[in-house]
Length: 326
Image 1: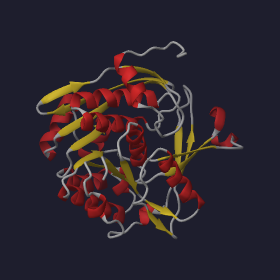
Image 2: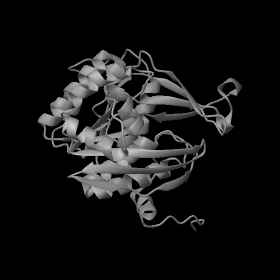
Image 3: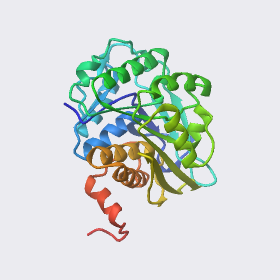
C-alpha cells in the first residue's frame, strides 16, 4: 500500500515576523511541522506513496495539521482522532549573529502523548509497506508513546518492512539515561539509523571520529546502515552541511554544501527524506547525495516542511546555478 509510513507528532509553529523577539510580537507566522510528518511530506513530493500515523484532537487545530499533510499528498487515513488532548505548539524566535535562534515548547498534554497501545492497527498499516520511519522524539513524549513505538517497530519487522530511525535526542523531553534505556531496546530491530555526533555521544556515550562512531553504532546494534549528518555552524545565518554513511563495510561521503540560512528547522528531516528516497530508488551512495542536497535546500526557505521537487534536487547534484532562473 505504501512506500513509507511514518509515526510521530506534529505541532503548530508560531514565529514572530521580521526577526522580532517574542516579547515584541504582535502577530505570528503559523507553520505546521514535526519530524516524521516532515519526512513523509518530503517523500510524497518526490512521488513516493506515504502515510503518516499520529493522534490528533477532533477540532479546528487538529484538522489544520491533517489538512497540511493532505495538501502534500500524504495519506492521513490512519490518523487516530480523539476528543481529548491538544495540538502542541512551539514558539520559534529567529536570531541573527550574535543572537541565536531559540525555541519555547508548549506541548504538554498533546493528543499523541496520550496514545495507548491498541489504538492503531499496525499489521493493517504495514501491509505491503516498504519502509517504516520514526524518531527518538516519539517515545520521549510519554511512557505510552514509548510502548506504542515499540509495538509499531515490532509490527513493522514482522511485516518485512525496512525500519529507519532518527535518533533525534531532545533534552527537554527526557534525560540521556532514560533515552539510552529506551532506545537501546529498539535499536536491535532498526535497519537504518540516522544521527549526529552529538546525539550519539549524549545518548550512547560513543566518542571518536565520525567513522569510529558509525562503526561503533553498527557493531553494537547490528545496523545495516548508519548515517551521520555533519553540520558546520559558522554564524547563525551561515553554515555548511554534509554527511557520511557506513554500509556493507564501506564509507560513503557526501558533498559539502555552503548554505546561506533562512531557517535551520527541518533540515535534518529533509536529509532523512532525501536519504530514504535515494535508498529506496537506488543505493546508499544515492541516499547520501540526495539527503545532503535536500538538507541544504531546506535551509533556504522558512518553515519545517520541504517544498522541493526531485528535479530541483537533481540540479543540485549536478551543479548549483546561482543565476536567476528565467
